[in-house]
Image 1 (cartoon, protein in one colour):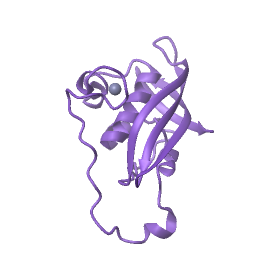
Image 2 (cartoon, rainbow, N blue to C red):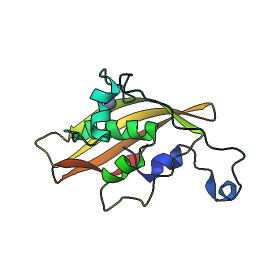
Image 3 (tube, rainbow, N blue to C red):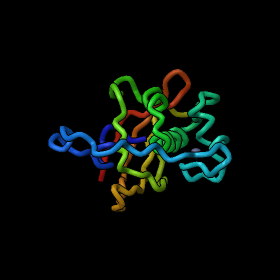
Image 4 (spheres, protein in one colour):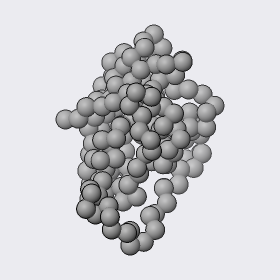
Length: 159
Ligand SMILES: [Zn+2]
């Protein structure tokens, strides 16, 4: 889903606090069980939903499914998946996960194009999170493009 702004909105510490060592090891990513609910909010179990895409067993067929799978990859901190579903034109060198942020839920608000019959598409969504216990929400309109038969995240705009 979201680009570098997602990590920023999720609570980047900024240049000052980044110099301080973390007082304790970062908590691990929340466990997502194969048979458990998929973080993206669709009714299928994780293994049959975004887990197939994360494992490389299938490619997300629509821009919305790719967006959902990237949200789930932020939840599970699957950096390789996020990087390989990022357009080379905008892809960062690394994904900077904020260990203090917990992603709490995703709501897809709108889509344009992005189906099997398109080469571009947009997905507008709200992602809810808590950052050090404080609830927040990120609203983004993401742009996607299809390349080599798979959807890639390009960039996003924010309200
Ligand atoms: Zn899913």
